[in-house]
Length: 266
Image (cartoon, rainbow, N blue to C red; front, side):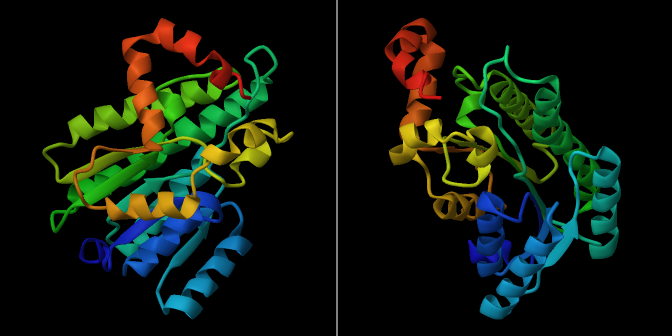
């Protein structure tokens, strides 16, 4: 893994906390150069300093509000211009709000689509011409999707819709780029123990109900970094949830009856 990542410059969105922060650490530990972007420049600078002190590694930070498409484009172009050669993009930033479709505000719906879908696609389209010009080696796009993109549940209608979109986009560009030496990977996760749930589940009901199933963000990040610059199509965690989504595709009606109680843990 270290040889594949060593000296590779990799953009990570939403890198100031959670999975994104852990991914940045594992890239640095593997000899790569994380280019970390997020809204909180203070958190990014703290992370950069900690990496330098602990690992004596080089990293770069950029403040960006991914909800602003103009700022996104300008910042990504600046990154490409300043670094000449960027090798990877990990679209990690995302938001979820677990509420019924009837009770979601339009503002919350737009926010989920803007961050989870539009920013991901726009960021990818911004760096893609640069990747296509890179004839010296392989490049990699990793999109953090969700098991919700394969199997929707109550109170996640819009969140699941955004992740369905991410999976559709990811699968299509993988085919489009199959002859271009650009790897494309989808990461489909169940619940992960991060600050994501402060917004998604402010009352803590869902977190309490699924606490024993929650994934460790460090283990998730380590797995993501381990597939960088390989042809891995998907990462699915936890494994049992992926089995459930496959059974759901085959027997949706039966699985909705069998898993009704599980589906309604939100």
